[in-house]
Structure formats: structure tokens, C-alpha cells
Image (cartoon, rainbow, N blue to C red; front, side, top):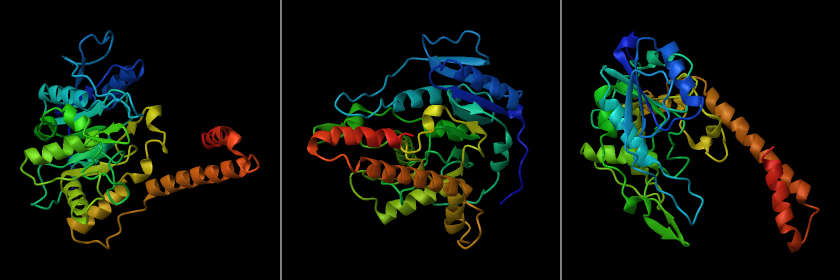
Length: 332
């Protein structure tokens, strides 16, 4: 582990990518001005967007490639190609050595995340691709030992060398056949989650032999590969360590399954296991996991309470009523 390197803010370009959110995007840009003074701010959004009075240095107006929608099930719109286009074009326009890519609905609340950039700099030669590790969010980087999602780093924010970030996003757009990949019980599902598509396509482009299917249990080999690629190419930071404030819609812990993410401390444990070969080294108190476990316990207690409350309501005719009451209690 090397000492912390001081990165000047005038060496950084910030790519704010995505749609313009009322108030949120304006606050996003102002927070960058506040905490990264002298950084170049690039707003990469869509033709026709209202950018009046927004504070940026360079504006990239992209042709919207559209998203994938499913009429027959509850999958939300897959905006993977919008993410690729707005990120890639924004990064390409950056003039500085370092780039922070951030979604347009997040707020920056500090710059101390920069101190992590030159920490944990050791790598496994067979698994490293970037010239320098990228800082990435632990939410929603999935743990393949907790959920059947391999090669799934979060795409919310990255910080690193411009060349590395461009390499990550300089990939082909996701095809319709990948989105409507398999039909089960009358419903179409995609081949990979959006985050998986980006990273797997990037790995394959860089001549790494990876393949997986979300419709079969994760193999131990692919789980280990995922962990080793994660530890040699990224440093996962919790939102607090990354100085990020998330929009309210990303704070639904049950719906978005925060519990299957890899926390910063869990990433450090993997780093000690695979890279430094010191698996017994203390990685620190995993406070983020303790918080997640307490939230999960709360939800489970609500579920038990909901069942107890509806226990006296018997009969097939009252099935919908029981479900309605349980759902209402569970959302408290």
C-alpha cells in the first residue's frame, strides 16, 4: 500500500452524465464546483434537454439511443445504452488526466475520496486490465456469493485515469437480442444485468475469457474470477467514503437489495485474500454491514408482525385483504 498522492482539482474532469433532473442536477453541478474547484465540468446529456442556467464548462448533447422496455412484466426500462453513450462521449471530451464519472442525480459532498486512489495499489498480473485501479461504488456492486450475479460492479460513479474510463465504456451498445434473451412463463428477460453487460463486454474486448449465465447457479470458478477482477481493477467505496449523496429513489433497501452488495471492508478482505495473500489481516470494523443487517432484521420483524396481525382474518374471500394489510404494515 503506497502513500496518498495529492491530486490537484485542476487535473480532474468531471463527467456528469444522464438526463437533467429538476433541482438535483443543478445541485450536482454546484456541489462539484464547491468541492472540486478548478475541475473541468462536462455535462453529457441529450438533445432537447433544458440546460438553461446550469453551471458547466462543456456541454455534450448526444443523440438518445433509447432504452429497452418490457410490456409484459415489471422490469423497469433498461437504460444501459444511454449510460454507455453519455459516459463514453463525455469522457472522450475530457481534457484532463483524471476523470470522475458521476450520475446527474447524485450530489457530491466532499473530496476526501481522492485519498483512496493510490491505496491498495497491488494487483494480480493475470487479472489486471486498467493502468490504475478505478474507485467505484460498493452500492450496487454485487457479491456473487450472496446473489447469482457475477462480474457486476456498480456503474453509479467511477474515478480514475481518463484512458481507463474510456476503455471501460468504449464498447458496443447492448443489442435487442441480449435484452430479450430468454422467455420464461410468457415473460422476456435479459441476458445480463446492465452493469454485468458493461463489465463482461469490457473484459472480453480486452481478451479476457469470461462467460456466465444468470440462469444457472454461479460456478465457484466464476465467483473466484469475479472477486479477483474486482480486487485488481477497482477499489469499492461506500457512498459515505465516496462523498456521495444518493437520490431518494435509491434508498429502498428491500426493492433494490442493498444486502447483496460488497461493502468497502468486504472488498478489503478480498484484496488481502487474493492480492496481498494475508487473508487473516484485520480489514476494519464492517459498520456498513452492521447497518444493513439491522435494517434487514427490521424488515423481517415487520413481516412477522404483519402475519400475526392478519392471522385472525381467515378464509379465501379475505386473501386480498390479508395481502393488502401485510403490504401496508411492511411499508411502515
